[in-house]
Length: 116
Length: 112
Image 1 (cartoon, chains in turn cyan, green):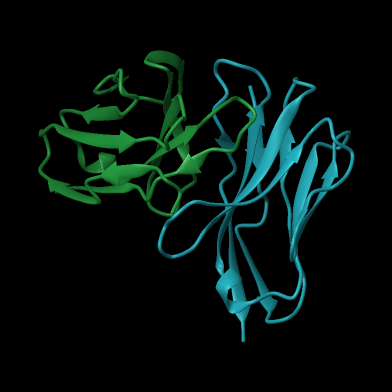
Image 2 (cartoon, chains in turn cyan, red; image 1 turned 120 degrees about the vertical axis):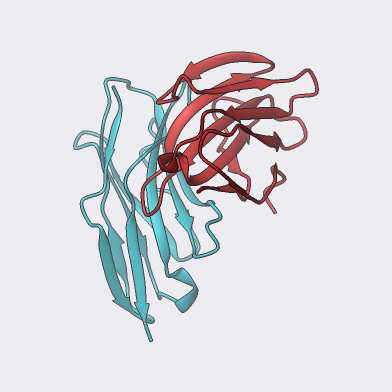
């Protein structure tokens, strides 16, 4: 069974600094997707970034980038130049790359606080 | 706006009652997923439908049921409600197995 672990329940960062959120996962599949979702106080689920397991290059979206280590089953999110609007819960998620049953498995989340 | 519409936004009901949550997926998306998020918890997968057929079941209680209709909208039925069913219920949709899930804004259910 797939499991996703986020070992940091809470993190804080000074505005304009950089922070890294950790995520590890367990799977027997070789092809899959990994995601980071952001959930602000409004409780919306917002896709931040996506990584395809067969791609070695780390995904980047503006100030957000990932460090994907497939062998170690690690998928961390780096937020550069942190802004007040980045304060939210961040969820790491896994999804198998197959037709059929392919729901997202979520970690328990990391609450990020941005200090002005 | 994700394009996924969930109604109602809020629902307050009493223990023992039955409610129906509704989800309209993004245009063209064939897969619908339901998730439950209890207070300060992660999202727990309940059930997935693809083009009207059930594809996967997660931690869905027997008191809960769902279906996806020919127009692709989906309903989640919760019956014999208990206090512990109070949660935020999300619907998400995707167009294919490789595409991201897009989430609705959720239905907040409060059972008193």
